[in-house]
Structures are given as structure tokens and as C-alpha cells.
Image (cartoon, rainbow, N blue to C red; front, side):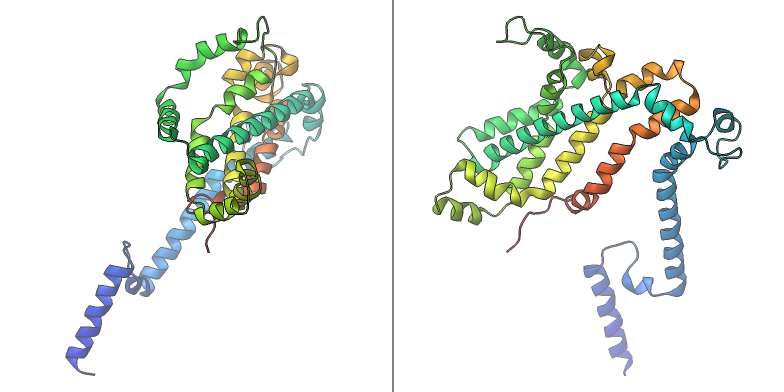
Length: 311
């Protein structure tokens, strides 16, 4: 092979690297042993760091939930130097009444999930698929609400709950509707669902309309079955937001009998032993972790929201 041919091949390889692989390190550089070893070492370091940062606090909480208080205070990172105390879990469940607050939290989370999913899907369907003449105005109004700080709406929203319009003397305090209804007005979820619906193939909608499907049938039988990824994303957002919310449930649910874990756990912390309190915190994290494990494939698959159906 002549010198000019080899030079031409090297030039072509560099041009391909510049066009096809626009990263800091090109494919040809990755083939070098030193670069490959450095990249592998970096990947291992980053993976271990992410695992420690992500799972470390959860694993420490799980360990501390069954560790006596003195061991946690004296040797916080030791693995049960004086044995495991399983009584912490039963004490937290029975004496602090975690079972009751746990049930309250599940009821609040399920209600908030249903209301948010219902409003987000119907509003997104109206703005994206039905597209009325005034849809751009509605879309702009929904988008504008994202620029209003939530703390600004706290007082008027509370006054609305205390004296809701059109309901006379009805008071929604200590009623789960006071938590569910405000959570349903979530502009972020509406715009997220609308964007996903915008990517659905319009040919399918036209074919369904040609076959005689009305707006409700189109929504229920065509749009929703094609939207499982975004429904999973909104479900995770809704349940985790309801599970960790503190300020609003504390204001509208002053009765301890109906309060969720996020409100009751800080209230009982000062009267509870550290090991029992950590056991209660560990129990409170079960549902969010289970939600992520159940919906992780759907959540990660729809992270880009690139499109719903191809073909």
C-alpha cells in the first residue's frame, strides 16, 4: 500500500470520527489500551459513586431501623455490634400508630393519583387531540400558572378550602378532598401529557373517526392504550408528591386521626426513641421504593418522551 493511500485512509478515518462520533474521545482513541483502561476505571468509579450516593442513605436507614439507639449513636456505621433489635419495627407500627398514619397516607396518595391522572389526561386530550379553537389560549394560560410561586397561592387556596364557593357553609377541613382537589390542578402534568399526545400518530385518530368513534371512545379505546408510558410517569410523580407533601396536609388536616406520615412523624419525633423513630421512617419509605421498582422500566423508557407509536 502506497504512502498516499495510507494518508488518505487516515484522513478518511479522522473525518468519519469528526462526523459520526462527536464526543470528547473518538472511536479510534478508545481503541488505544491506555485510553480504554482509563475509561473503564472512570466508569467503575462513577458507577460505585452513584450507587453509594443513591443507595447509601436507604441502606443505612434500613440498618438503623433494627439497631438499638446506643449502637446508632456510638457506632453509626457499624453493622449491628450488639445484635439486631427487631422490636423497633413492631413498636413503631403499634405504639406510634404507624399503621393508621400509613393507611391515611395511602388513601391520600391514591386519591391524589386518581385526580391528577384524570385531569392531566382529559386536559391533555382536549388540548392536543380535540384542539378547540381556543386551545392555544388555554395552553398559554396553563403554561402561565407555572410561573406563579406556590407560596403565593397558599392563603387564597386555604380560604377557598375553608369556605368553598357554591357549597354554602360546607367546610373541607379534615376532608381528604382538601388535599386531592388542589393536587389535581397540576399544570406540569397537563403539559407533559399534552406533549406526549402531540406525538401520537394522527392517522390512527382519523381512522377511528372514520369508523364512527366519538370523542369519548377515541379517548378511552385509542389514546389511553397508546399512552401507557406517560401514564406511568405521571403516576410516579403524583404518588411520590402526595407521599412527601408536608405543609398543605398539615394546614387542611389539623386532626391527627386523618394526618399522613409526612405530618405525623415530625410531630412525634421529640417523644420517640431514636431507634423507633428510624424504624418508622424506614416503614414510610416502603411505598416510594416499591413505586419506583414497579414503574422503573416505564419511567426510564419514557424519560425522553420521544414518541408513542411507530409504524
